[in-house]
Length: 220
Image 1 (cartoon, rainbow, N blue to C red):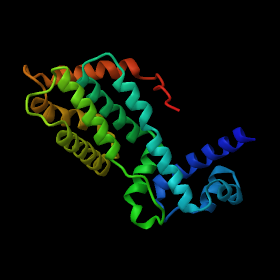
Image 2 (cartoon, rainbow, N blue to C red):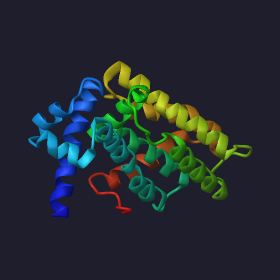
Image 3 (cartoon, one colour):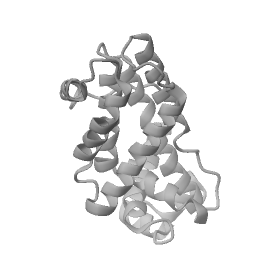
Image 4 (cartoon, rainbow, N blue to C red):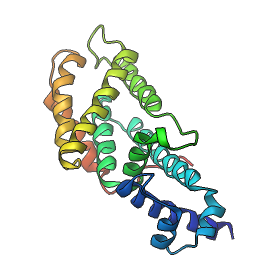
């Protein structure tokens, strides 16, 4: 019974994510989700309570995507900055290709009209980035004087700004190139001498190729 309930919940969330991503919070109703998913409105209300609860469920699923990626990239045997760059590109791909992630991003942008408490964005990414920068400093990869906490805030802000522009201009079709361009601008100020941003990007691409198609470890 519990397994069936979880299957239903996942199917409803997946359908709701498609509709929220396409039409936004206001433009999506429980009836729309019921019609598209094949489940009754009663079943949806049973699992989520309300449209607000359904939106929160999509956002929670959005945030739940990330811990397994972080664990995967932090645990790899490679230079820390290569791993940080690779992680950023892997996340960029999810924002382009994963409807749960895209729907969560749209719902968060519409948070002012969703009357329910929502998870805070960005804080976890700033913590992860600061932790990886601290590890890079300990490994001698970081330039002297780089403050991990302040730099992490700048990197996360720059990353999400790049996403916003790419989304507005071409639906994130060029997001990998845009993130690579961002790193080419930022890495020379982060790396210890000799500066070689292209080598770091190449290392990240090698790691991405090695992990492509492999599921990231599940942290549950």
